[in-house]
Length: 104
Image (cartoon, rainbow, N blue to C red; front, side, top):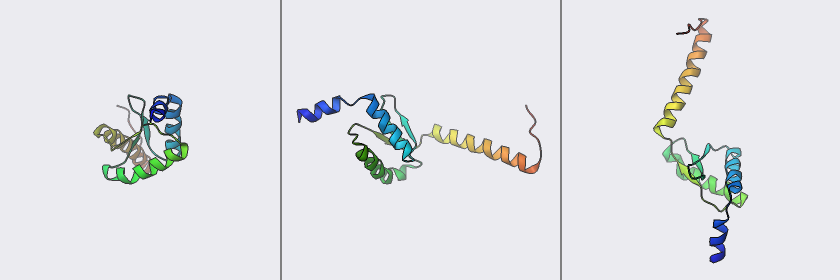
């Protein structure tokens, strides 16, 4: 049991970065939390249970035995997403109608 505790203490930042990259490559939206733990951001809270199985599978293939996180979207995440969609939608609508944007 002491061996397992020692192994968990020896998890380096490099391992966490490898886990972050592997999860990104698998198509997940990932961020590093304030404590340096790779955290997957799900589109909705209901997707978390389904995504957890896939995350564990990816990390198991990597042989990563450190901690990781999973969370639903924050209100600020949704606001940023909505603003980006509004900007894209506005620019395509203006281009489609042939009108030019007037700077404010």
